[in-house]
Length: 165
Image 1 (cartoon, helix red, strand yellow):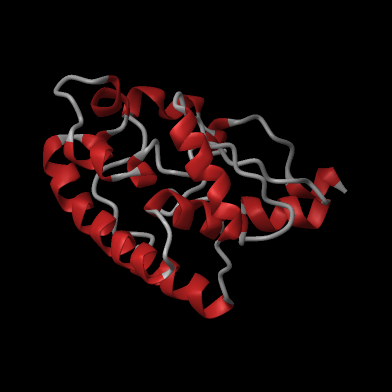
Image 2 (image 1 turned 45 degrees about the horizontal axis):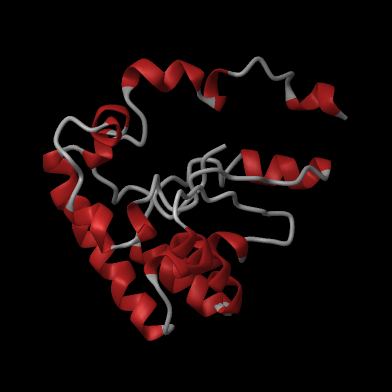
């Protein structure tokens, strides 16, 4: 499932259930579909791109609002002497030893930057500060277009929790 600084809806139910059942958590899009990957994605989303079509949070009006969130994370990244991608990955990795994010990339320099996130150490106070910097309801626009929502975990045919024990 998707889990990132701006997609945190699995934190209340799914994460605790996985932990109760001893299931590892492998979140995709830990950089918010590239949003926290670097300033270039924030400044140069091509018009009519796949990102804009699939992710309403990248559409013009929403993107302008979300750039404020990027700026906040950028300031925290400077404080921690790392890139925004490294901070976002360190945050998700620090959620627990059972969390192994899978960031995607097509460039070696981004892969190297992602690996560099392992040198970022976050305290509980840091984690709270980062989480508070992007509150759950702060992101403008949905993370997925309405015509793709039926493919999400919310519509999975999963047995009730009582039947899993």
